Length: 128
Image (cartoon, rainbow, N blue to C red; front, side):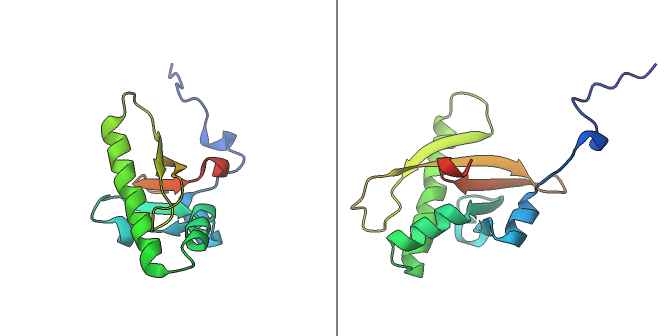
C-alpha cells in the first residue's frame, strides 16, 4: 500500500500567485541586473518598496540604483549573521542616498519560481 506523505495534493490548491504573476501585474519589479554583482539569483522588489525609494530620492535613477544595491549588500550581511534556518531575513537599510534619514526595516524572502529556481524578494514588513 502506498502512503501519501504530502501535506496537500495539487488538487487541494484553490489559488496560487507566483513571482511571475507578480512581475506581470506590477506587484514586483525585477532588480536582477542591478544586484547581480552581489546576488546570483533572480531578485525582485515589491512595488511599494520601490516607489518609496523613488519618492525619497526624488526619482533620481542613479540614487535609486545605489539604494537597491545597498539593500542587496545589507541582505548579504544579514545572511552571514543569521543564526537559524529560515527563508526570511529581516534587516535595516537607509532608503535615502544622502543617508540623512533613519534606516528602515526590510524583509527578504527566498521563494521559487514556477520551474523551481530560487528568487529573492525584497519588501517592506507591511507588504507581507
